[in-house]
Amino acid sequence: MTDTILEIDDLNVYYGKSHALRGVSLSIEAGEIYGVIGPNGAGKTTMLNAVAGFTEYEGTIRYDGADLARVPPQQIVRDGLIYCTEDRDLFPYFSVHENLLMGAQFRDDRDGVRADLDVVYDLFPRLDDRREQEAETMSGGEQQMLAIGRALMSDPDVLMLDEPTLGLAPVIIQDIGDALERLNEEGLTILLAEQNSTFALNHAERLSLIETGEIELSGTSAEFHDNEYVREAYVGVH
Image (cartoon, rainbow, N blue to C red; front, side, top):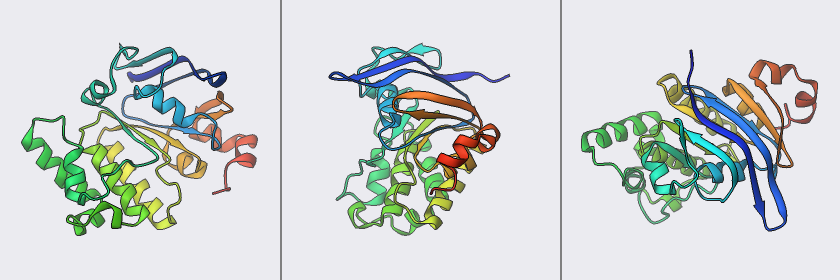
């Protein structure tokens, strides 16, 4: 038996007169990697922003059984639902170590913070080598690793990642994929929004395809691999 940890039901988002999300529904089970794929502008980021409390919406979002409708973003973070945005949102003049500590700002378990720092540095050895380096001087791949590491310092139960492979070299994409697999094996639930459909298909157990604000297809990774439309439109492009 698995338990649903994040449920999105009939989610609608409007930007003025533009209907950006149209009745989006999906559920993520505890301990899985769930992928949401689709082209740029399809609504992936809008969906994650709604879940994180950054965007007004109609419909229902439940996290661990609780309705998030009136829960402020900072409380969502404290409750273990952590969002690593496409923009990374690093503190550019802070060092790697200082950025990681900022991820733990809502925590008061000093021993746990120290243990998680060791986990992040073990997960991403490049960060360990650059502890005192300012974030703005790092490569795009290193900054992405730092953004994920900082999110992990918030002690997530669910980690939401928006386009973590965007613009990165294949070797860095491989490193990030390996890190996500390791985190998932240790029990972390991951919601992965990606234009890089091949990456999502290789790592997610189940997926949804979103186009023009609507879910067009949901299923297992194997079902997506076997789907002719997905293969022709998305697989092998990246």
